[in-house]
Image (cartoon, helix red, strand yellow):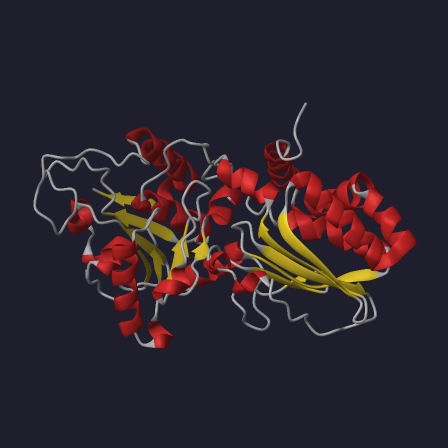
Amino acid sequence: MLGCQDFCGYYEWTFHFFREQFGEAALQALWASAIGLDAQKHYLALGADHGLRGLYDAWKHTGEEEQCDWTFTLDEKSQVLRWDMRKCPSKGFLLDNDLGADEDYCDHCIGWESSMLSALGLKMIRHEHNHSGQCWGEMSPAGDSPPQLELPVDIRRDPRWNTGYIERFSDHVKLPVLGQPGGTNDWVAALRAIVTGKPRVVALGRGPSLASLPASVHPNSRLLVTASAYAAGESWWVTPDLILVNSPPDDHLLSALSRRFQLEPPAKRPTLAYAFLPSVEPVPFESFGLPRPIPILPALIRMGLYTHVPNGPYPTTGVFLALLAAAVAPDNVQIHLAGIDGYAHPSGHIYAHAPPTSDSSWPACHSPDADTAALARLSAHLGPRLHLHT
């Protein structure tokens, strides 16, 4: 028999299957109908009979059964029901078991809750989640717009809230991911906007093959680099458009990255991106004076360029950068890669700007096979648009 959290891996895989095979609309319908109006109809019954008080009692019971580390608050005067989740057992199961099949597991909660609440004449006034197991939300009657509750248990006071990447909802609608009015509410579209407008995208690792990149590709190109190169003070013909933070980053890298990033004029600061792999400990980027990076896995998963292998090796940062370029560049754009040498350049150098070394061992979290397989997928995806400079 499956326990109350064991099913979460199957749940997530099903979401990915629906999204991949039938599209986003079909997945939304699955959440709304099969879960919100069927599997969770006990919430409907209690809400219909007792309103917000019935939902409060139902969720309190669910929390005890599922061992949720959360607080539910019912303010009957304001007619607001709120939760503050300190550690989600569902997302926590995925993180603890290094599972990451779908591009956005956390969206399923508001996906089913919205339909259930609407059927009861209620709404989710506001909701946020950080993809690290912390979230909060407030519900009220559909015609009301009460102010936020001020509570000492507000999860945003918890240091864990500073990790992950935030998605926000208002009245069941996902808000622009970068906080810009009228902007996109899709992380993949946000990344695509960064690399559009030029005929070439150049993605650079730190390997010796950097020297083989012809200067002729410099003009009219979007430049993507790794955080380790940027933090080490390396320079290019233009300020990078995007910096991919290494997984996992250490405090030294984050501090050096922050120092250089803060020296850039605000209008010219590169966009930061990060894999947010489930196996990597959450990183409090804002504690280092850095903005939360944009997640790259939604783009890689959606384009079929990456499948997460639980407890297995994952691509090096340079290869992740190459995959990102392939996933988000427009179809008429040429992709140039250099400095991605897999610790095996004939020169004996691992990095272009470092002395040669006899130690070319791979970090435990990476492997030659993982990089080779990723580059093969990239090559098949791009075809003649790929230019690999070695």
